Length: 289
Image (tube, rainbow, N blue to C red):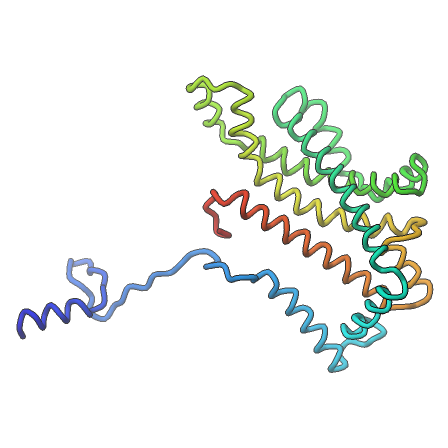
């Protein structure tokens, strides 16, 4: 065998790990495995909802799902069109979105302010954290009769309920993230003679951003849960009002339309928060990234 032939065979031969004795194993190939979930596929978050829709459609078509239990998706689509054209569904959707967004905004602002005041100050924690933990043990929906007595049955009661529901996950996750900042950063800041305000702005608050965004995902979901409940109280508009009327007249298809709209709201809102999280935290090296 010539030197050129040997070199060619060496170039095409697979790389093999050396044996314990120092020589190669001729029948063993190197297999590289990737730990974690693997590379992200484009629009992969739509796979689960589309699969759920397919199961619903196939089950309804095959007769496994009775129309009395769950209306078929094509009948829901027809009812959606009917509500859109003849019953001002767009106006009811706008009313529900306005309530949810306003309550969510107030809850997020309140949760962030309280979390920062409690997380960055021992005095603030002593004054704020205890009452918040007490509130966590009391379901907000159980306070609705009290809110009705305070605010009446108008929009104030509905928005206040949603705001109080969303405040808790924002506070808990942001406060936990603030308290979880590595103490070595504070030591480094003291060594470099970094001011407290600059340290909080450039280190503490960015470090707490993952916790805040996690709390925001929970807050978006619970804001819709609160919306479903408060719209049952003497509402004259909104998706909950439509569903309440449908319940009185036994219109299952209209109820399912409302449930689908709530589900789409939640899915799109959570997707938006996840996209914001991915962009805002692109500097982190995690399994998701």
